[in-house]
Amino acid sequence: MGYLWLKAFHIIAVTAWMAGLFYLPRLMVYHRRTAVGGESSEIFKVMERRLLKAIMLPAMILSWILGLSLIWVTDAFASLSLWLVVKLVAVVAMTAFHFWLAQFVGAFAEDERPRDERFFRIINEIPTVLLIVIVIMAVVKP
Image (cartoon, rainbow, N blue to C red; front, side):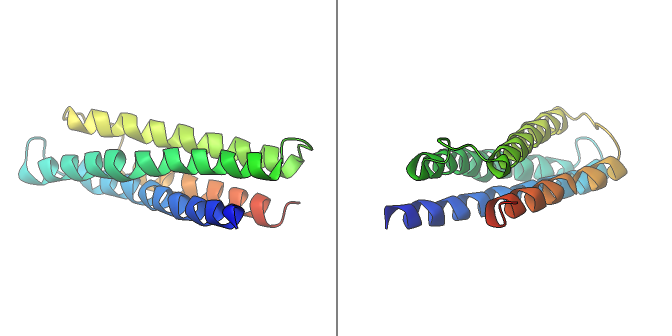
């Protein structure tokens, strides 16, 4: 029963984290269009900061804690499978992506305009690709 609760809360945390990873680059697309110091720009700064710090960071931390707990409870490290290694590499990449986005949030907060809209539209697809890999590894276990 404890395993199922861990798994349920892990899925909830991952869902919250993914929602933020999908939404934050989209906010940056629109933030990039605003004038430095304008009212819209200031609103985007607040939205980006709150999304990152109040939702995404706690969800990421919980995803890691609960995911590692699931590995420990199931003793998955005892017979390390390729699917688990691939999944963990993808999760590490997702975490790196999270912190890369945090750098952009910091730049926007300083009224810098890093990259163009197209760049943020393109990187918005990265979490989708990683999510596909992670889910296939976790469910299908090829």
